[in-house]
Figure 1 (spheres, one colour):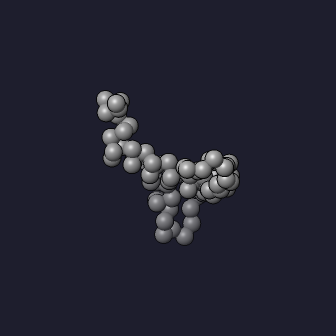
Figure 2 (tube, helix red, strand yellow):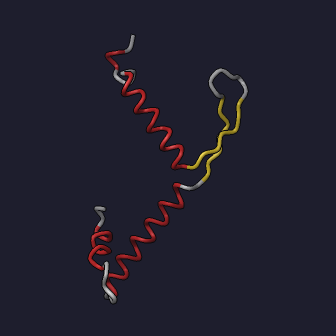
Figure 3 (spheres, rainbow, N blue to C red):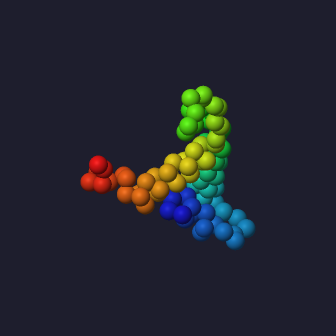
Length: 89
């Protein structure tokens, strides 16, 4: 939690009343988090040729799932050493 709005939200926790500037800051934080969640849950479908097949299939994933798959692939490449130019034949 590194955003100023998140710090302000922590400061407001447990209080019964908060002042108007604090409400605006917290509202901006909530709107930002909701926009990010909406973007990550968006479903994206693409036609892809799967390995070993010449036929394209429709593959649908959320943005968050696609990002996670990309991160797993990059991590696998880092572990095998193929991502470093000096290891290529």
